[in-house]
Length: 426
Image 1 (cartoon, rainbow, N blue to C red):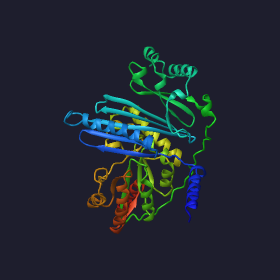
Image 2: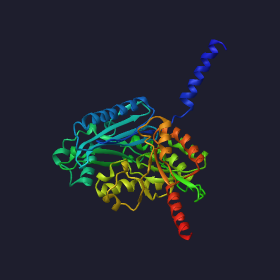
Image 3: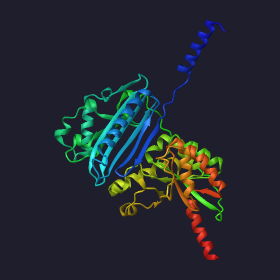
Image 4: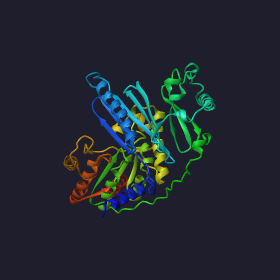
């Protein structure tokens, strides 16, 4: 091929890539969940594969994480336990604007709030620039914000603080239907520390109204696969916490390859970004359980907050699958009487811990499962690590080779009942 032809071909390929293919921006969720004698850490944040966005998000999370470990160590505070929780919201409005907001809380075991922080990033995909709320608000909008705050939170608002709001630096996201503005309670209230938000319909903003996408109805009439279990053979329940994630699909493929199922205790805040995964999970006959909305330390929360964590997760699972979970796995395996009294869900823990969150070697994870497993065991794993998805590829055939059937928690419970009835008849 001549030099001229090579250049022409290269230009043609570039034109195809830039004009003929519409790029889709879909986030993945990065998860960091750790537990030790002094700290509980649950961090979830989105990665967009856009370097400019992800770099700033990672820098913020890393700073919070490292500062927390340094400040709230056992050396500094030997008699207290501290929780770091970073939660997020992510929106992609009509492939024009990506919005990210991170909510950071640091609490103590006696419910003392140490830090309430908000990180916000809104990115215009057409101009490849970060934008501020100043692109959307004028004096009329400012008046509307002021009025909505008093309409929604009048009894909490401090007049002195609200009159000094800097409207140019407000935290906001562009959802499918609203421009949502978020305030830290301390910034506009005297004695309220939680976040407050208001929603202004997209139709109020001409530049957003013109590109508003059509909302698609979620289809949830999924019929799961039915498996048949021999109650006389040994059974074991594989369970996975903290997902869904980018590694969950690989685990689902392995489960399907060996014609077996597991139970996934999911976080509500991750389902929307992994909606296809959770639908596939349910469709293939796996069971879905509730693991809270954003991995807050449930036994530390108030009754109302516990209810909200569980209820929101139940609702979003049902929205995407049509299935309503009946099992709850409390975060960090922490249970108290308040939590037991505050939910109708059956609480399920585990009796075999692979410690896949701690150990990075696949063989170690597999050995941790196999050394303590027995008939009726519930094995704890996490579908948020690539090493776990690799360990499952080894663990499942070994369990089958050792005579185990892999079942869901519901199937395990049913087998126990049937065995008891059979024993009584005998």
